[in-house]
Amino acid sequence: MPNLSRETFLNIIISLGLLVFPFIATAMDEPFYITLATRVAILSLAAVGLNLALGTGGLVSFGHAAFFGIGGYAMGILASHAQTYTPIFTWPFVIEGTNQMLIIWLVAIVMSGIAALFIGLLSLRTSGVYFIMITLAFAQMIYYFMISWPTYGGEDGLSIYVRNQFPGVNTLDPSSFFYICLALMFAGLGLSAMIKNSRFGAALQAARQNEERLAATGIRPFNIKLTAFVISGMITGLAGALMADLNRFVSPTMLSWHMSGEIMVLVILGGVGRLYGPVVGALIFIIFEFIFGGMTEFWQFYLGLVLLGVVLFARGGAIGLLAGKARHD
Amino acid sequence: MTDQTVLQIQNLNKNFGALKATDDVTLDLKKGEIHALIGPNGAGKSTLIKQICGQLSSDSGKVIFNGKDLAGMDVADRAKAGLGRTFQVSSLVMEFSALRNVMLAVQSKLGTSYRFFKNVRGDNNLTEPAMAALKRVNLEERAHIMTAELSHGERRQLEIAMALALDPKAFLLDEPMAGMGPEGSKKLIGFLDELRHEAPILLIEHDMDAVFSLADRISVLVYGRVIATGSVEDIRNNPAVREAYLGSAA
Ligand SMILES: Nc1ncnc2c1ncn2[C@@H]1O[C@H](COP(=O)(O)OP(=O)(O)O)[C@@H](O)[C@H]1O
Ligand SMILES: [Mg+2]
Image (cartoon, rainbow over all chains, first blue to last red):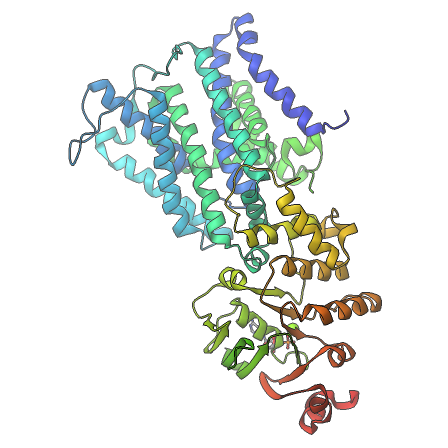
């Protein structure tokens, strides 16, 4: 394969596989598989968000569930008000709910971006274990807030009866919704690849490797990291809105530290900092859950063993194992 | 202070606990000159550079650069203001090629680090100035080598190239010749000799031959204090300096 690295080849195969998957599932007469594939696409997108912060920027956020959950609640709150024909608030101006995905996505992105800005401002002064703990603490704060706030279901969460709408697409059809999610996953991958190769991406990678040098070069590391953290949170927030739409349900579970851990596991399994790492991680995760989840309650224990193996023996995650070390230039 | 003064350090102090690392240091850097800062190991030379760059805060005193007090400015601000420094122990982006390290400096100089879409590879606005800077330090043939694979001497050259790409108004070079072979040192001496006309250089160097051949002025730092400032001749003949520092070497 001249001019085509093994990694690129692998990425193309995975992309094509996902693109034709609904046809395979339909041919197999297993429509439920399409829902599984939709989860792969959505979890991938969530992990693409984290991978930008963690892989490219070296920001080990253990609080990305905050953005995932905020995206989920953006969908839940807007759609529940549309469902009951009640405005969200009436003063100082009236804001109505909506069941339009495009608006929901926009709100999810903006709200998770604001949250990431706030959390980033307060946590990015620290690094290492402190950063991990502070991001975790902020996510838990939001988690407990949503549990104790009765307006939107508290601990029970919110159910939405009908999937939200997208112009010109029947979103109730599983394949159609899958392709919406897949398109957004590809958009997220494209965006993160572009960012990584850009001037901003160069500064972000330098911030990960040597902050002192970046600052001495006249670029303030804090601002670079904060910007990356916000973009990262926005992408994960969008994934949260999609996940809520897939499940037609949002609850504080989406905000819990388990969710943060799950997103991080996807990134590590697939390969930290590798473009398709999140996708491979999500594939492994969902396949594991599907195969072993039916056999044993302890499937996550076995996934944990795989994770341990990856961390100990395959530093580049599954992609590192399949395609070798990352190429630098 | 005349308008020839680019960098003015006034009564600067820094203590590490009971240790006076910088003790009431006053010195300046004038247009077109190389001002060498010499002194035994642990005298506080690197600490002084770090204070000037904003990497370490000062307990008291002022750093005035082009007539502007740098108080309250962080490392990035000061670099943008035109302080081009190199580190005593090379500090580079190790997983970048030499070229990409310098490209980082070029994008900083251009003020374009918040561009998210255009690929930096093959971006002539970055690669051309970066190549030019590498060429000036004779590193252009190593442009595409990963920094982690460069020799110590080459990393020193790369640090200088990054400083050059920032087009600074003053250079602060912390032992730039350390780790370079005699051939490399000789080339660098010739290069610095010319460079002083672009921007003045505050030069920390242990190689006395280099210092005596390059410096317009020399300041001697001992236990954080400047014990003498003067021309090469003044310093060679200063009894206090001979005693405290040059010792057997002189
Ligand atoms: N961060 C620090 N904390 C405590 N002591 C320090 C620190 N940095 C330097 N020192 C001490 O300050 C003195 C001056 O160090 P330095 O500026 O590196 O000397 P030089 O560059 O002249 O060899 C030394 O005694 C060193 O041990
Ligand atoms: Mg030193």
